[in-house]
Amino acid sequence: MKTKKLIKIFLMAISGSIGSILIGIIFFGFLIFTPSTPSFQFVTFGFCGALFFSLFEYKFLREQIFVFIVILVLQLVIFSGRYINFALVIRDLFFLGSLFTSILLYQKFIKRYTQLKLYIRSLALVVTYALLNILFGTIVFIINTNNISVEPHLIYLFARNAILIGLGIGLGVDFYIQNKAFLYDLLRMNSLKSI
Image 1 (tube, rainbow, N blue to C red):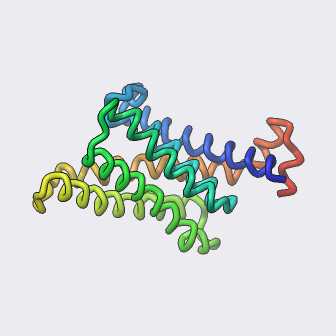
Image 2: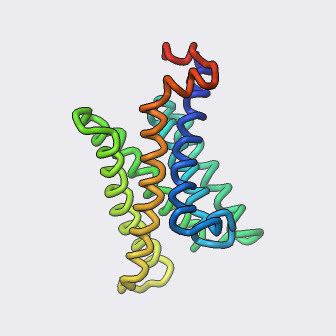
Image 3: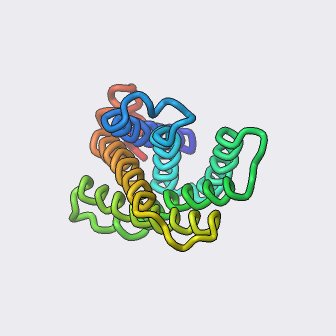
């Protein structure tokens, strides 16, 4: 039973990741695969968000917290090199936190409105993530610069990235949910349909 759930978690996470990557390629090309560019977020945050989403979906609470901590540490190690400073810890904690919180709010509140089509609900995820990313990004800016005057350009970047990544994750996960029976047949995993 647990193995079957893990396979479902993996398939949903991959679907959401692919959605984010495809949106990233459409808007930024193959630059999203370059770790030194901001658009690499489509790969890292796309995977993180899709994984959070699937763990929430299949109710693995301890695993959600564990994965959040592991991803935070990996983010810091991969993108900061040997030297981890306070500014980077704050940045990654808040930006991953905005993604994690938006998916938590989606699962707790938005998902309940089953009369809405999945794609409409995924747009609600996009709006939630964009608003939280602006809020959390502004907090990061204020903490790291001691300046309460945030440039409109930064707010635009916080919103744009969240909208596009959230849209990719939402569409990818919705594709999985609507086509999981087909995917199980394709992968010859018919036994998954029972859970």
